[in-house]
Image (cartoon, rainbow, N blue to C red; front, side, top):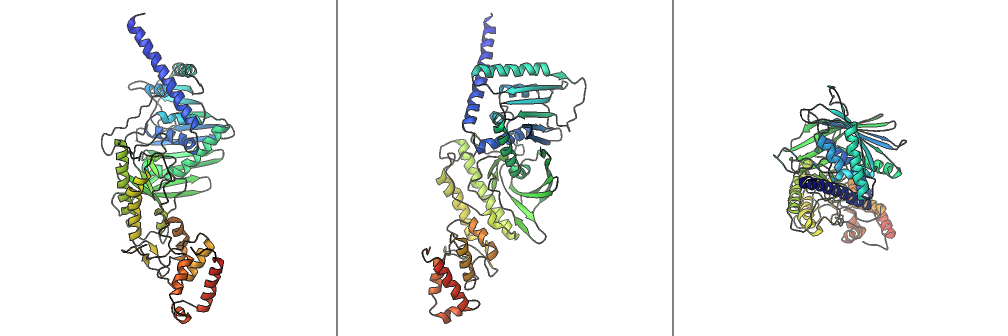
Length: 519
């Protein structure tokens, strides 16, 4: 054998071995770490790949058929056809991800058939990929190939890769001048599921329906996503863009159609191509309302949701195609290590704070109701990708400082008041007792002596559940202290709205109820 041929043969073997080892290592890690977060991820990996191969009009439609009875799931799209490179790289599990940017309006591709595609094998170790492939200046060909990742050792994976390449070669059929209609769903991924795969499919589809409206707002290339399961059909489609009075803010309408119900959802986005924040709004006949976030909705998006960030302590959703996510895409690097990617992420998060302040002030100025749904800042749980100290100082403290000083909460008297004045004293009181019954009674009593300071009754529970401990500042003990400032019943009666005797009876009843806990 010529020496050059020997070198080439050894290189080929080295590449095969590298591909096999990479697949084994990544699948092993996925299976070891398989949890709710990982099991959701498959759906977004497939949608990301579809988004990166838009058709000639720059859009893509997606259909997901889930057949629980026959234990299968089909993912189809009408994006650009495969190239030979695409399918070979997919077989070899080579990423074509390119995270460079040509200009500010061209988002980098999320990544086509990279390591994330392997998460779809949590559905099934085998997937059939079928459709058409077409290279530049060549006629399209139909093909069908099975990707088999069931092997557990290097040799079996290499054999499976070789078998897939052989299938590709044998199944490729020229279309003989047939014109491929790009409106058709020409690309299909089919997974045959076991019981675990069925559960994984359900979890992914559930998360899809939670996060999809935000993805439509962030990713203009997606035209529609249709999910079918037996008799159930739900189609999510892109609607019109609605301009607002706020610079760089717009609202995307998302139409959700099922057999028995049609619903429009509206996602308001403020920002630029590089960084934005978002929340859902509702338009009613006499008022506008900010909707409550689903507790399972991820709070960080890199165009697509970073699963596991639903407990990220930021009051609205943040999106940036330029975030540097962790692997397995469950957060963004925000530790104290000196790395360029960490610095970039931190800078964008600080910028997001300014966007949030701008949006909050806008909603307040426009009289939106439901403001309490976008001021919830719970304690940040421990994450291995975040420095809690940095996050508290640079993000949380900044947000809380602004929230505390703006006219935010309606008092029972009808006046809108800030939480605190310039000296740090409370301007509005929110009952804090853990027992809801006691909170209600404290509110009822307080509304008759300090209606200008106690929160509006209809919003009591909303503010109690949204604001942090410092703002939930009024207990039964505080009420007792206030009553003690009156020298006698006559003085009290001058400050009580209504019958003072009835008020005192209610007051004593609350004290007896809480006699063991004045806190």
